[in-house]
Image (cartoon, rainbow, N blue to C red; front, top):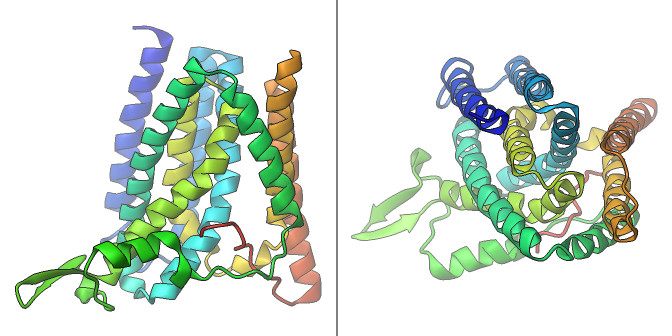
Length: 319
């Protein structure tokens, strides 16, 4: 077996074992996820992703491993932005606390499935039309500038969300959770509950965010293994991160600016490659770590000094 095949095999085995451990031992179907349990699970997924980085360093070499770590940190930091909108979705639809873990899990697994399709299409297109990278770069540059200058007090109106309105048009819905069911039969006709709608909203919302994050990962690496593994590890950590951060949504008011600077940097990195200027992967890693860390620390320090919650980071375009 080649080193790449070994890495894929190890990734698959580790992933299965980790899911069994996380879902079987650390989680129960409807048990409440406490802050302590969420912290344990978050640390578990982060350490697992970092351990895989060490394995890739030994098996595939320093450069591939650094690309993986940079891509993972990029996806992980952008996934924090997802969390804030996930919290808004659960609040908007009034999902009971006992159903949140299961609904969130199914939504995230669906998001991973859709991401794999999205990444596969992106890889094929870039292999055939390399100039698409420059378009991605321009889009990331535009998105980063727009995100940096966006006002934090803008609110998302989920009732006007295109996906939600589309679901309303094509499916018969009921306004309750069906006691934990995703569909019910009433009068011989099948209706879909709020929980079903939330799962679809979670998966499609993640794909909207992936329109930014996946092209950014392509700027770091075009290696299939790096793109797939970094994305899957980052998204699988979303569930525990959700429960860890849901009580601190307003403590990360300036995270948006940190992410925006990273997107601008990645966009420029893609564009300057047209002039055969290659920015080393360790530079990308350093920029990602510094920007995200600085924005998080600054947000927490500002919130701590003022004692007043800052506006939430929920202004990315979901309409």
